[in-house]
Image (tube, rainbow, N blue to C red; front, side, top):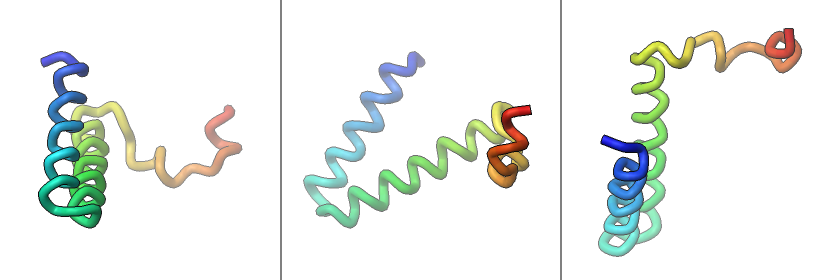
Length: 61
């Protein structure tokens, strides 16, 4: 599945949540989507847990 299709599905889900559930549901769906995205990237090996806890100076080296 291409990233464009995934983005379209995510946008439609956020739109439905905002229309039927209001702004609170929109924020909940967006937050859970972001958590799911980060978890998926972590499980695929694209992210490491240390990436979230390093200071800026360590990344430049």
